[in-house]
Each structure stands twice: as C-alpha cells, then as structure tokens.
Length: 101
Image 1 (cartoon, one colour):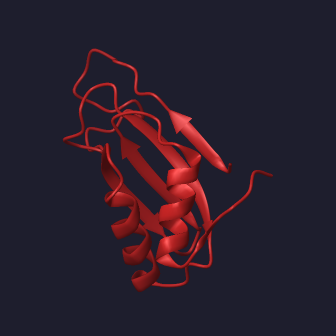
Image 2 (cartoon, rainbow, N blue to C red; image 1 turned 180 degrees about the vertical axis):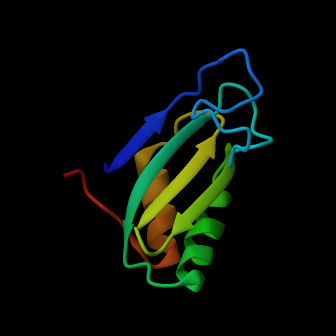
C-alpha cells in the first residue's frame, strides 16, 4: 500500500511536531495516527470531496485532506486503518488507491 504513517510525539509545547503553532490536525486526540495515501484519478475539487466523504465515513477517522494535484490523501484516525477498508472507500468514490512502489 502506498502510505506513510506518522505517530505524533509529545514535544512539551503547544506547537506541532513541525514547529508550527498551527496544526492542520487541530482538535485531534492525542495518539491519533496520520497516514498519507496516494490516490490515482483525482483531477479537481469534486474528486477531492468524493474521496474525503467516503474516507470520512470509516470508523475512527477524525479528518481527511485530499489534494487532487498531488494525489495525496492525508487521513488522521484514532488507530491505523485496514488497507482493504481504505481501498474499498476510495473505490466507492470512483478512484484507485495506488499500489506500493
């Protein structure tokens, strides 16, 4: 699966792990898992919305950010998601989860 997973680490600061005081995952629970997937076929905002809606419906998903221009979809969830669930949601939206390189 073409995905990168990050587990946030406490830095003892209000700032994110990147040093920014503005975190895109604001409001997520401590211990949340961030995974970046590569999705093929997205070309516009409508595509981003369709993928976001399907992935947001998965249990445990806290936030989704899809970017058509790069094909990257960032998912923040309470726990790691099963690949078959992510693949099925992306397929339902009409797109494809890229195979690992």
